Image (cartoon, rainbow, N blue to C red; front, side, top):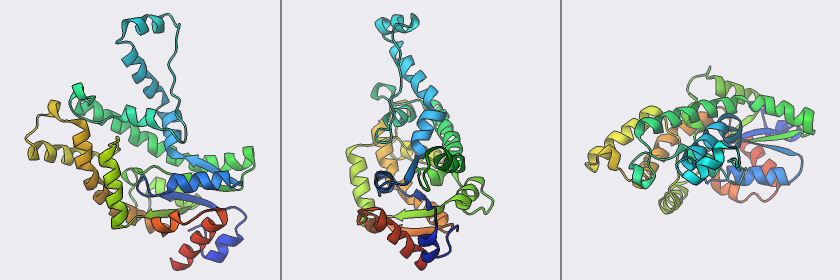
Length: 285
């Protein structure tokens, strides 16, 4: 770890952390708070994915849908209108909408092969965005004058790294540049996340083998045809399994850094509170 103790962390002229864990446990909350608190640069991996690496695919997909409408198709062909993605740190819907869900096209689902292609795109984009982190650390300092840096990773970071491999290129790069911080949830947090997801199911990124296993098991359990699967039902059914699948992956990543509880994160109200929380985690490591 780049900080060996709480005192080392408190004395450091530049504090750099990478927050990871399930979506909904406080990564973006803390990152926004640090950015608004002053001398912290906020690097959003999902924003980088949606702008630098998948922006063109997102816009092309929107154009393809618009081309199905004769009125809009003619305007697009004559360059009378244009379509752009308005992705922001707070609104990542263009990215998740493009990623989509597999199932019945009449219900907004994607053919499994197309869904897998987009999953592969996301895996490559997420890996590249994570490897961009050291570049942005330098950029934040040299261009904008920020001394502190927070990497706000996506929930699927554990799907694109192999934390059990000491030579994993992404984990090695991140751990050499930042302190890895796992925001760990409790069983109560898991239940609440499942409840939220059931109410508003969203696209997710999965490991290829895990996705195929879930798809096969779902079709068998519900005796469903691939082109008749309800996309929302599938991702709801898969969500709890995905959380159980990710937990040991996050735990393996945490061995490269420190762990804080989601309850502790929820109690952090300012930058000094965050720094004290990380100091306590370092002393406990």
